[in-house]
Length: 341
Image 1 (cartoon, helix red, strand yellow):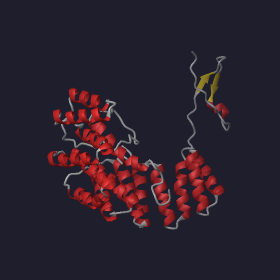
Image 2 (cartoon, rainbow, N blue to C red):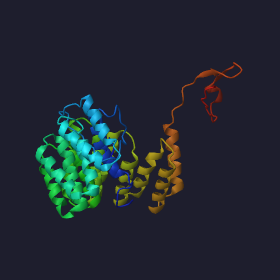
Image 3 (spheres, rainbow, N blue to C red):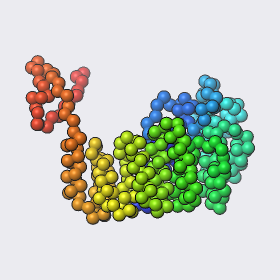
């Protein structure tokens, strides 16, 4: 699922953040379609996959084989043709949304007008909310890339659709925030996505949708409201998150709370050591006039305070003599787990 689950200071702090939101869409359809037995937050990065509603007919074995055979084809033209045949022969498949997305992506790369026609026909024929959501997303993407004058129309159409998925709302809200346009509608979409995730008790989506809401507020210049959204996202997530915390740090910096900005980044280093995150945190501290040595010491103190003594155990050494962990109290211990062959 993260970002997306679909889709630097005044832009998303990581180029992967848009993909994160697309990956939410991707992972949802894979899980619903039975293509994954489990999924981590990152998911994939192909926005051609959309989450079907629970009412979509579960795919039978032959439809699984047909879909996988189609996407395995090397030739783009043959792949598009096979997926179009798939749509004709498997009207109840949970993979219809994914198939539409892949066909669109293939056509958009070679024949944008044909891609637009696919969207138009699909929206006229399809009734399932998940399938319609991917088609609406692709209409929005088409407008962004090929017909910018119709972005507002695409946004309005999404707003008028009664049963769009929360993932679609989140993905479009994020893209609108990134573009800096239609921010009031982006906030409506983000709020709706959060409400849907909350109603479904989906805390994973709820946290990352709140992050999207916070980013919309940030891009709108409402830094205090953005801080509240980011802090709530971290609370629901249950632990610091690199992207959400970086968004929070940026919002604190814009609001003039420089110490809190650096602390938000430092939170990421209490339970782990990540050179890239440390470099980013120290660069922010320097830019905001904060003492790097003081921040380093604060992280060290917090690590010590959070440390939990490991449970004592006793094992025999190579000579057969018992050795206990407690024998080395106060010393640095290196445990080497190995298997002789």
